[in-house]
Length: 199
Image (cartoon, rainbow, N blue to C red; front, side, top):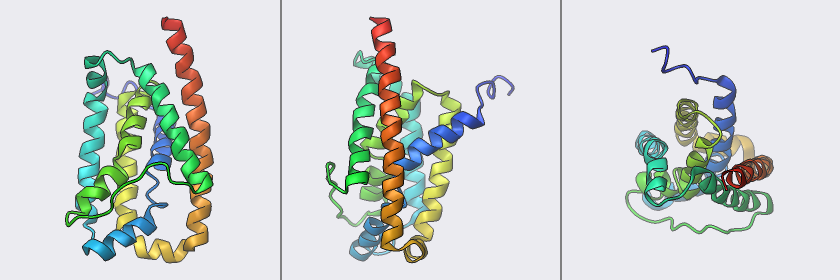
C-alpha cells in the first residue's frame, strides 16, 4: 500500500485537475447540455459521468501502450496535444468554432454528452500528454475529481445557468481559455526540449 502512494502529490493532482477542468469545460458546456435536454429529453447525470470516467481511465491506462504500438513517443504526443489545447483555448478566448460535434441521438447521456463533449479527443489527448508531466496515480485522482464536478454540474445545470447568467459563463470560458493557452505553451516547450534531447 505504501508503494502505491509513493508518487502521490497534492500539487500534481491540483495541476492535472486544472488542466482537465479547462479542457472538459463542463461549465462552459451548460448551454449545450440544456439544448441536449430539449432535444433528447432528460439527461442521466450518473450514466454520463460513469461512461466518461471509464473512457478517461481506460485511456490513461492503455493510451501509452497504443502509442507505443504505433511507434509514437509520449513526448511527441504531448507536443501534438499542446497544439490541440492551443486550438481549444482559442475557441474559448475568441469564441470561434474549430471543432464541430453533432448533437443528436436518443442516447444523449452517452453520445454526444459522455463522448465527445466530456471525454472527447481533447480530453484524451490531454490525459496522455499529462503522463509526460505527472504520475499516473495523480492523474487518476484528477480524473475522479473532474468527474465528480461533472456529475454535480449535470445535476445542477439549470441552477448554475441562472446563477452565472450568459455573461458569467462567457467570462469563465475566457478565463479558463487563457489558463489553457498558458498550459499548452508550457506543455509544448517542455516536451519539445525532451524530444531534441532524445534525438
